[in-house]
Amino acid sequence: MNSNRSHTSRTSRRVLITGSGPITAFGLGIEPLWEAVLEGRTGIRAIERFDASDFAVPFAGVLPRDGFDVRKIVPKSYRKATKVMARDTELAVGAAAVAVSDAGLLTRASEPESEPTYPPARTGCHIGAGLIAADVDELTLATSTSTTADGEFDIADWGENGMGNLTPLWLLKYLPNMLACHVTIIHDCQGPSNTITCAEASSGLSLGESRRVISRGHADLCLSGGAESKINPMGMLRQQFAGRLAEVGPDVDPARIVRPYASDAAGGVLGEGGGILVLEALECARDRGIEPIAEFAGFGSSQAMASDSMGLLYDERDRSVVDAIGAALRSAGCGPDDVDAILPLGSGIPEMDDVDARAIKAVFGDRAARIPLITLVPYIGLCGAGLGAIAVSLAAQCLREQRLPARIGVEDAGAHGLDSGPAEARDADLSRVLVFTTSLGGQNVAILLERWKGDWDR
Image (cartoon, rainbow, N blue to C red; front, side):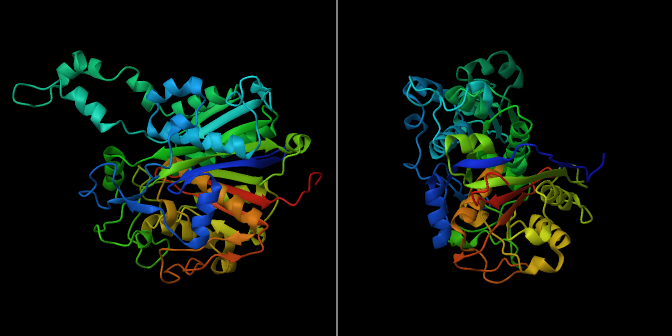
């Protein structure tokens, strides 16, 4: 396998972002997230959903209890279906509703008699998903019926009888394609649809897939992004076994746990969230008179060589991230000197921060120390498959508002010589922002966004 094989997207139709629907620890939509990152206020807090005291870090970027109820978002006729939605699916459905509203679209979820903005066959949907963890209580209730007389689990009885004690339609809650399934049903997306499961790269790869579909004329609009929640015992345990979590006590300041690129970076914190964006062909957006948020100008992806075969660690000589960034720049018709800010993974996991830093230095050379980095994870945690879509939503907002968020978590410029130290929110002259994401598994994705300047006929 060629570890540095990358994909460069060749487009014929320009693609715009016309709706943004992030869902994070701050709530639904870009406004609460934008307000928090300008203030420098983290959404990471103590986990209350279950007893997390024995985990390495008992904190996460969790939505407030009263901040999100999927039953209040779906059409009344669809509320029964929420019973078979895992948390990840709920997040995707909520994010899609916000994005559709933000873009001023009418879909089947709108008034029943309303004509949809686009024919269903011209509306696609690509949503990234993670490894959805089953509800522990559901499993416990079922497995407890398959034990021996001395209380040991009986695998034979489980296969013969116990599995029948799972809740009806149990499996349908935990299939990764259920995120896109429910969104397409609710909004009647009958165009190209797909699910991508590549850890933190999932939603960025899904956005790239939507861009290609629109560019080649197979859809005029796509709902695209990803969502995931690892805030459950099984999800957290997997990440702890992978060595990705910081180890902290219950009295630590949540805003200081994740320290991207700092010399004392000690690991990550998980989060739940995601985002759906509305991607739309330029001529279609122009015809319906919508003002775009930003242009989706470039895309690239690649696969790293992982010496441990699991993608936990990238090889120090690996250039796959450089290839993905280079592909995104080439497909946008620009070079490293045209990038004004970068939003990398910035996980606070030292090994992954090293990967980010090596790629930035390799691509941008002497400019690497002067290009401001936007660090998102200290605010919302590692949201798995949903992280990339949130990052793109935030980068698009930076372009629209011509501002850079505050950087929190770190106390100095760090060990990599990058512009990643503490900073207040500030005005900036931004024409292009690069978003790139590495992942557990070695998939990489890079997206270049351009400021919308009203150039419909460029």
